[in-house]
Length: 389
Image 1: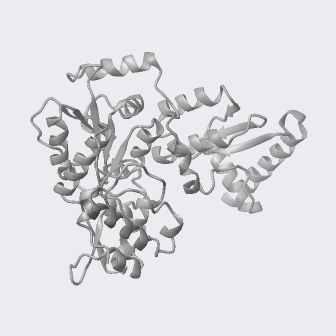
Image 2: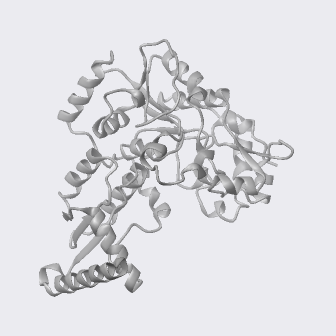
Image 3: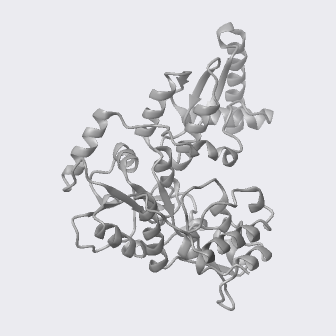
């Protein structure tokens, strides 16, 4: 019965497409799917679409599920000034229609963003893709005022990746395969206290989170456990921060879209350090041999082909485990990040320059990384303590 319904849906869809193609007005149209189910994908795909779309084409866009309605609103307001865009309602239905069309024809009815990694450099210019309107900004500042913050106060957003979000919103999927990317919020405590000491407010971001910090300061605020969470406040807080500091997840693409500085810790696998062009330094998770407990050098990581793994099980099969960055390593990157955003002159030592050059030479031996952005900076102190050969 299901197969019969799918065939009926397919033939109906095919008929509609053929009909539309007969209408002169729709000769230059494209059906386009933007993945908005996760914030990270939506942020990247909307900007790439904006920069690749053409004024002469009419775009019918659908979204299967929207992870941040306010961000989408900003995007549509911007693109509608330059393009002819028609948003199709009931995106999940269109997704099913397109899937059925492909099932029977082996052809895609819709256009998608392809080879997305190669297009990440679109996000490296200095001009923010989106901006918060002034009237909305006033609303955001008014909300933060309840927590003792003023409009001219500066804040830093911190984030640790854990399983809370995926457990809540993807209950029917096994998401544990990405647990190797997680780390506890406690590891950010020294960095947070440093930021507070330098008179910044610190806001822990995220829609869901595990664990909490007992930091006795009015300058620390755990937004992830607050009652002011909303799609709007996610965008507002991350668009106005002095910098984003923390783990890798979709949320870190929001400050990138608004062109705020971002500094990442616990990046893994090693290939992710070089996946897209970065101007801000990161630090990564080292790997240790499970049997000997010995930390692998960069050279051994490449020889053992463990730089491009993407699942928890893959690391186990290769007999390696990820080592979280220590609180001290994270604090050292925090010091470096403050120097950068405060425009302090940082002079690299000869040892640091040599280590960066050695790292670049070594990672180029990896068949995948050699074609990526292997010049990306790594935290200076962290790099000093990293074994290359």
